[in-house]
Image (tube, rainbow, N blue to C red; front, side, top):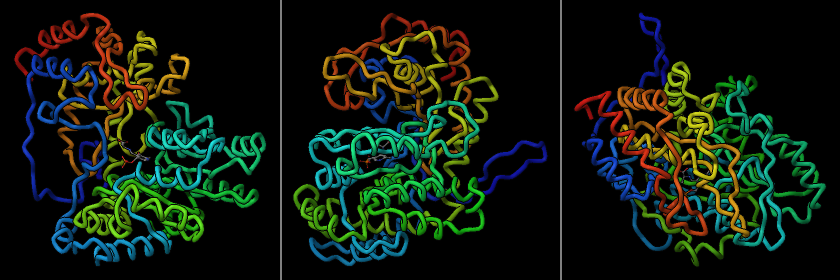
Length: 482
Ligand code: F0G
C-alpha cells in the first residue's frame, strides 16, 4: 500500500489492487432502518445483511479474496483423509511459522476450545495481555481464570504509545508470584489486541514475555488471528525491525512461542482455523480432541476450498503491500474523525476504527450500554453496521451485577480490501453529523438477555423514544437524502 501526497497536500492511502468482481449494495431509507434495528432488538448482530449498506460489523470471514486465492480454490483436492490440499497448507505453515506440527479447526474459537481443554483445568490461571470474548469463555468453561497484564498505556484511549498491546512484565511477574507457576496453564499473547482497539505488541515485548516463561518453565501461546496488522505495525513502528522482512519478523515471533493458533477468517483472508506447535507433548494432548469436535485431522471442519485459500492468503500476508491496506484505511478514518472532534482510539490500530463511546455519549451511564446505543444510532442515520465492544460484550457476575467494561467502544471494522475510500468518507460524514447531534442519543435496556456471550443474540429496547427524535432531526437536516 502506498501513501501518496496529492498536489493539494492531502495525504491518502492508495490501493495497490484493482477490483475484479463487485457485489451490489443497497441503502434502505431511514424509516426502514429504524424498523430494521427495532426488529433486530437494537443489536447490530441481529440485522439482516439486506438492510445494511456498509457492513463494518467485523473483519472476520468477510475480507476480499485475491485472484490467486480464487484460482487455488479450483484445484482443491477433496478427500476425507490425507488430501493434498491439507499437505499444501501444512507445508505453508511450516514455511511461515517454522512449526512442524499442525492441527486444523473450523475457526478461531474452535482452536481455543481445543487448547483450553488440553491445557486448562479447574483452578488454572491464564495470564494474558488482554482477553478476547470467546477465549475467556473457553478458559472459564474449563474451570480456569484469566488474569490480564496489559500495560496501563493499553487502557488509555488516546495515546501516542505505538505498542499499546504490550504485556506489562511487572504485572506478569506479580501474577506468577501470587498464584505460583504450577497454577499457570499457559501465558497468552494476543496479536493486534482486539478489545482494546486492535493494538499491537512489539517484538521486544514478546521476547521479554518469553524470558519470563523460560524462567518459570511456562508455555507461551500466541493468538495470531490479527497478526497481519501486528506485523505491519512492528515493521513500521519498531526501530530494530525496520530493516527486517515481514517473513523474518514472523519467523522470529514464532520462534518465541510454544503454540500459535489463529482464526483464518482474519489471518489468511478465508475461513477456518489452525493450531501449530513444535511441542510433541502438547500436540498429542490436543490432537485427540480434533476428530471429536472438528473432523478428521486433515480437514478439521474446513472445506478444502477454504484450506487452499488460506494457504495462498498466508503467503500473501508476507507482502507489505497487502497487509498495509487495512491499517492505512483505518488510520485515514480515525485521523479524519479526530480532526473533526470525534473521540477515537489513538494511535489508530488494526481491525477497524474504534470510536470512544464513553466520551461520544458521556451522558449515557454504563448500565445503559453507551457503545450499544451508539451502534444502533449510527445504523439508523447511515445504514453502517458497527459492533458494540463494551459492557454489553461482558457477561454479568454470578450475583447478577454488571461487569463494567474498561472501555466502551463502537468498533467500525475494516474488512481487508472491501471498501472504497468514498464509502469510508460517507461513514465519516454520518458519524460527524451524529456527533453534532449526540445529545439526542440515549441508552438501551435488555428485554431478552442470554447468560453467556449475551451480545451475540440478546435483544434490547431504547429507554425512551429517542430513536424517533433522531430520525426527525435527520430528516430535517437531510430532506429526502438517504
Ligand atoms: N481471537 C481473536 C483475537 C479474535 O479476534 C477472534 C474473532 C477469535 C479469536 C475467534 O475466532 O471468530 O474464527 O472463532 N474475532 C471476531 C471479531 C469474531 O469480530 O472480532 P473465530
